[in-house]
Length: 162
Image (tube, rainbow, N blue to C red; front, top):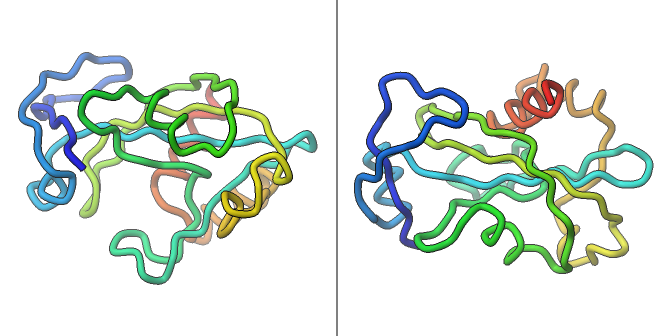
């Protein structure tokens, strides 16, 4: 997947425009630790629970940790919303919540967070594989036990500020 990378800002701030650097394969961007974009989605159900996804044991980064229902790099020529919609099994209304930054040994990204509402039944078994709905308290407990990706931790923080 080709992604746009950006010049590293001195101090990234919410909503700050980024200067394009180069288009590069996402794995090469990770190797070079280049700044890029990622889109994340939290899905609420009618009972106020949030859909989270357990990363697999085979994942190179953040192995076996809980993360957002959907998290993906934004490919060249796409925007955040297009990228998320392409991965959803059904059309859903997306609400923008905010942005957050993840910069650690694995990632260097500006992430845009969206929410929506649905049910496991509407999303389907294929989509729900490896995902479950949890209460905010359950997610915060996992965060406190370091059982989540920084993406989920920052997504929840962003959600609580909104």
